[in-house]
Image 1 (tube, rainbow, N blue to C red):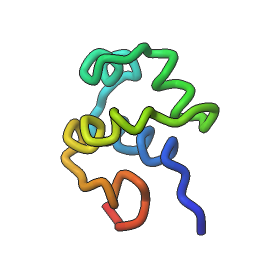
Image 2 (cartoon, rainbow, N blue to C red):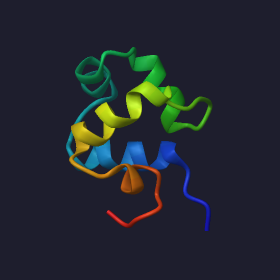
Image 3 (cartoon, rainbow, N blue to C red):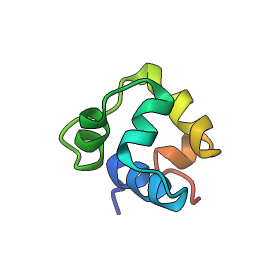
Length: 69
């Protein structure tokens, strides 16, 4: 089963009760960028992967869906 990073980001954001705008503000991107990630129309830049993982308190393996959260 293929896990899309957008779904993982969406699920983690919802788990933490954040809006797309709140997440965007915390990692320094636009709300539109978060929306595109969550709908798999775009992927976060590689430079944002560690900040995203830290924001959610997960490993990169978990963020990429390699390891269960």
